[in-house]
Each structure stands twice: as structure tokens, then as C-alpha cells.
Length: 467
Image (cartoon, rainbow, N blue to C red; front, side, top):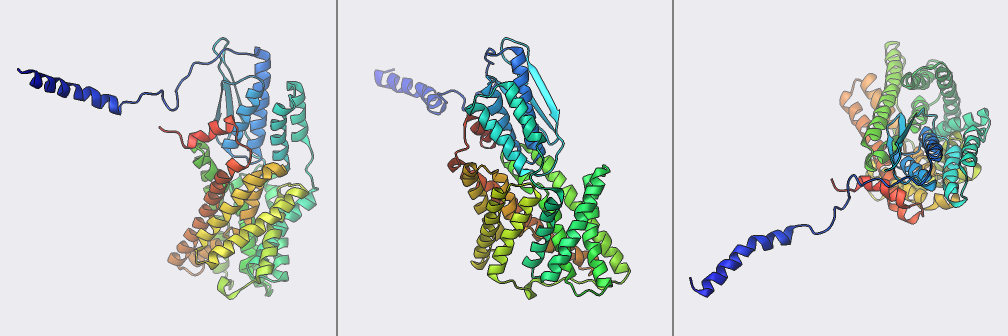
């Protein structure tokens, strides 16, 4: 074989090696797995007390409505503040577990069962403020435990009658926003007060939440039936719709969507299933009373929203008042109520502008939710207000209470299953659009909000990490 042929053969033989080098990775894994733990820098007693503090803070945040991502980031931040940097946090819908496994001492694992208490924005802000102060002020463990006790045992900012006025205010504003007059608003407020008293009484007796929702929806629909029987000239459909909005607003649409997007599928699935179950309770309560009314030949009817218009200025003020009422019912401080008022008005304005531009109702609702979610994430850290407050209060005026009632009325009373199902599907689409829009807005606003640190980035990476 001549030299030219030999040289050509050698070059062809090296081609597989060159191709392998061209496509092979040269760096370490993007997300290293199972790194070796570091030696402990604190003694066992201090480690246990610090883990207990972090666990109590996380449990308290979950109980008052915080998302799984926010809870996890805060727990890791608190533990690291006392030298525990190799912690693992696991969250389900009803429990929170934290473990510390250094290289040179036996591991420690603590768990707490979480019992939801409902939205409490003042207590949530107090907890997050304390978690931030642990790092900046260098609080000792005993002092931190004591301050957390003070936050959790502090009385609500308002007396119970004032708190109850918030729910009635939400219902009255819904009635006005849907085209009802002062009499409809008054009846809706009184009906919602009865719903709130009923649910509270059933809760004290330990009745499951599903049946509380059934009872609340039955009270709202039963009040409408009584108004028709008494021949009171009131748009009964608006009374029922107002009650539905109050019941729907307490469900964790936003929390379920955020947990799903943030990489917490177990918690998201549990939250979503709870929302579905409790919404089914509302459906059962309304359908049962409507069926009884139909059998008794009570002439119920549903107002066509197209025949009722509200002046733009009145609708704007009413949306802000509705958000403020919801914030009051959720134990928000006066400054937070003022911010919630602006959020409600902003959401309504955005939705109206989007609808006037030709967007559908679900798309307009999503656009409004993105705006309030973005504003909440960028501004509330500076105002010391939970971003969740702005998000939830902003979307309350857009919840599809009347659409749900129209769908159920069409199925149960009019026997028009197709039209009823279409209305219910449309209502579900609006609810999902609101939740997804809020989550997207919060993610877009987070880089500008000054709240991102290495713990927050570590948690959020669950949503975007390669598998």
C-alpha cells in the first residue's frame, strides 16, 4: 500500500473518535445529584431548636394560605440562618417535614400536621416579617420562638361583627356590580350574613367543609325561593350569585395553580381536588334547592346579564369596594385594605379594557389577573403586604358567580343540559384563567420585587430544572 493510501485510511479510522468528541459533553452535570453532606457546624440541641422554629414558621404559613414554594423557601432560609445549610423540606397538603442530615452526626427529622385556618393576611405578614428579621437582626433562638408565639397568639385586628361585615360587603358589591339596586344589595348582604353564621355554627360542631359549602349554597338559594314565594320584587338570581361568589372566593384556586407551576405536584393535586370537592358542594346545595323549588312550582328565573348595565364609574368603585370588603373579611390591616381597593379597581379596569378590545371573557380575566399578580409581586414587599392579598383581592370582582348559577338553573329548572353545561364550562374556564394569570404575573414580577435569594431560586428551580 502506498503512503497516500495509508494516510487516507488512518484519517478515516479517526473519524468515529472525532465525531464522539464533537458530541460528547465536557462539563459537570447541570444539576449535580446526591452531593455529600457537609459536617455540622452547630450542636445537636441548637440544631433541633432551629429546625423546630423553621418548622413552626412553615406550618403557620401553610395554615393561613401561603403557597408551597413560599413556605419551602422560608423554611430553608430560617434554618440556614442558624447554620443548618443541608436541610431537606417535604410538603404535602396536610403535613410539613424537615430533615437535617450532616456528615458527622446522626440525622434529625421533624414533622408537623397542618390544619388550615383560612386566609389571615395580618398573621401571614407577621410571620414573614419575623422570618426576614431572623437574618437581619440576628435573633437568638429563644427570642425568635417567643416572638413567633406573640405573632400566632395575637388577637385579630377587628372584632367579629366588623369581620362579618366584610363578607356582607362582598355580597352587596357583587349584587350592584351585576346590575342590582340598593334593595338587592341589602338582601344579598343579609343573606350572606346568614350564610356566614350557618357555616360558623357547623364548623364549631366539626362538620366537614364539603357539607358546610352545601349548607351555605342552600341558604343562598333558599333565600331566593323565599323572596319569590313572598312576592318581593327583587332579582333573586343576583342574590344567589352574590352568595356563590362569597363561597368561591375562599377556595384556593391561586394556590393550586402556583403549586403546580412551581414544581409541587402532590400539593397542587391535593389543593385542586379540594377546590373541586368544595365547588361540588356548592353545586349540590344550589341544585337541591332548585329541584325542590321546581317540584313546588315556584316560578324562579334568571336575569339575562345583557339586559342590565352598570355605569363604568359605579362599576369601578364597586369593584374596589368588593376587594376591600374581602380584605377586611380576611383580617387585613387598614393599609392593606387600601391596597386591596386599588387592586380590585385595577383588575376591573384591565378586564374592561381587554373586553372592549374584543377579547373573550376568559382572556380578559386572565389579562387582569396577570396585571394584579405582577403589581402584587413588585410592590407589596416594599409596602410590607403579602403578595397573595393583592392577587386574591384583585380577582374577587371577576369570579363567575352568576355564570355558575345560570348553568345550574338551565340544567335543573329549564332542562336545557347543553346550555347549562356550556355555562358551567365557561365559568370553569374563567376560574382557571384567573388562577393561571395571577401565577404568571407573580413570576414576571418576582425579579423586580427584591424577594429573590438563593433559597427562593433553589425552590423555583423545581419548575424549570431538566429531568
